[in-house]
Length: 245
Image 1: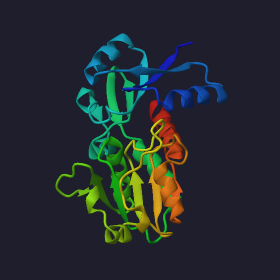
Image 2: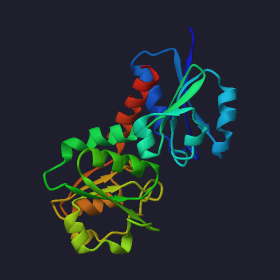
Image 3: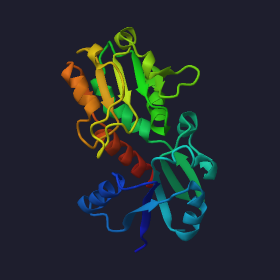
């Protein structure tokens, strides 16, 4: 029986969700011809070597900090990933690699049932690879998305720019930064939480802890909240479909 090898690349990988998720999936679904491994790489420049060492690779997930850096190393890239400018899924076929982005699928499918008529404008905290997928999904939904950065570039807001008026206009707030992720659970994005209301929805891509300080502060103001666990599960399933499709 030919074994299908899958895995995850990133650095570091101590926080990885994917390995446990797929190993559990293989066990529950009785999949005996697949393995999932963590490939921790200190440099994305080691990717060609990884391909050479593991010619039986069928698919990879990509996590921090390589979702954008991996693109020049791929033979092809899906249109959505090209538009997002970030890849979190690689499919190996006929000796070639093709990059996809399933983060936006996971985010879209996990947030759509929570959206209310007032959620027409969003603040996206952070500007990394995951934020690009979030903004792409929001734009496709017809929601205006505004980046917020510690070092804002043209067209972006800084955290000091988030006033009461800005929060009144932007009732959807998505945290794509690692602030609040275990073990540093006492951290949260620096926004004026006192201006959040029950009209707001706060979404955190972090899933550990289940309720970050960002979400706790929002809930204390009456906002609806959601963490990123379902998004991760949905993007993983979308990756699996690509690898087997």
